[in-house]
Length: 328
Image (cartoon, rainbow, N blue to C red; front, side, top):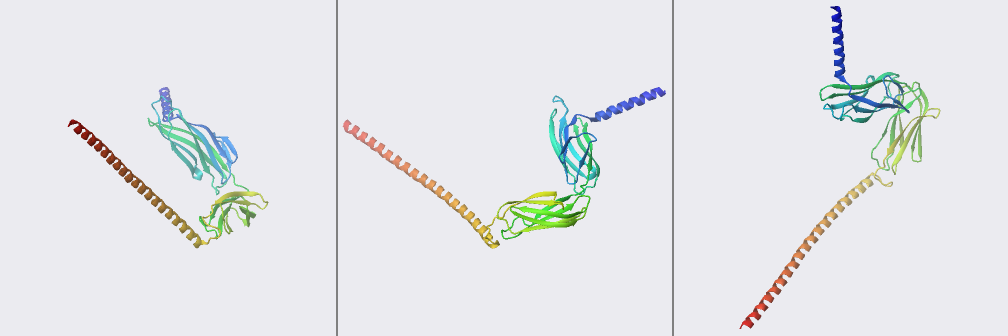
């Protein structure tokens, strides 16, 4: 009796295992997956651990393969691919379709936030889909992201220009937010803004850990498009961070004030209106010329027809006279 019960239990376990396998079929596969971070690139496999810093981007390059044969009557509905770091509330998700026996390449990116604490975080690359028989298919790779705080790091959080459109005589102000994302308090921080041949410097005596410092750069005017380069240095003149900012000049002349500029713009608008008016006049003239030509052409045709009629009538009359004269 006990032996039969054992066989029954074993049978149930085998059937259950088969059912689970059937329910989670693997006809969908992650293929040739790579993870890129910093200057490193590694093959992405289960339990891989990578070291990153705050403000760093993690990219995954992968291919998804549909393992169903081309002759199969079963096909996938919409497929989901997700790259996530749940404990950091970071996720990138895409939906797509993939025909049988085909593959598709993807790149998914997540940015580690600047305020992320030093720790290990579980990450996952997951694909899921149901087929036309409503069977679930999945494949995934679980790995670990180890976030290490910089010992010394000042980061440029944001930059803002005071005016998107400005007049040439107005000053331009660029506001910059800096944050200490390292482990220690920083001293004698130097920020350098280079615009064309002009170099502006601002110094910060000290910046506590995780604190934000706002600085502003102001210069008089720009007469042409400019690439602005902002660099942040530590007290040993080592580069912490840098950023490029593009500033587009306004539509104005160096010698024009605001009122003159508005007058210039009005004149430009009037020129546009005048040009449009001239175009309409030219169009009307062309139409009139075409009409006149058409009328003149019709008149010429009428005259030719009249002359031809007179010639034919005269010829018939002459023939009739000759015939009558000969008859009598």
